[in-house]
Length: 171
Image (cartoon, rainbow, N blue to C red; front, side, top):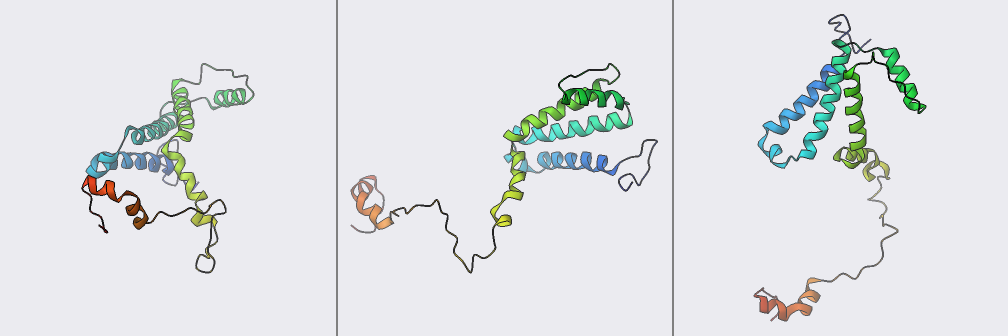
């Protein structure tokens, strides 16, 4: 396997485990360490980081430290898919913590900022023809709108602008 070429430990150390936990840790340290990024950060920015870190950490803990019975997990997964779940006591709390965090991430994903990454694949710059110099693209749903120029605006509101002390071009 290319992912586990280091072969550290009895279960092979996967580079994806190290990269995932390292990347999420880097994003958190960057968000906390850089003052400009910390200033614009909200709780909605930290919550997905903690979820992804928790999912990765519980996955790593299950793989390398607390063993999980894969057969029982498979029986549970098939039971969940067929709406007849059977929970076996040999699965352990670490798996249920992992499953809970993953479920929270799936529920949170559509209403979060994370859904913006789908826009990369749906953006017009990727999906439209790049012929804007040869052809003018006009939205078919655009209707003609009367544009109110500044001169017309000033003609309509000149008295009110003078009363408010605003400068006008024509007296």
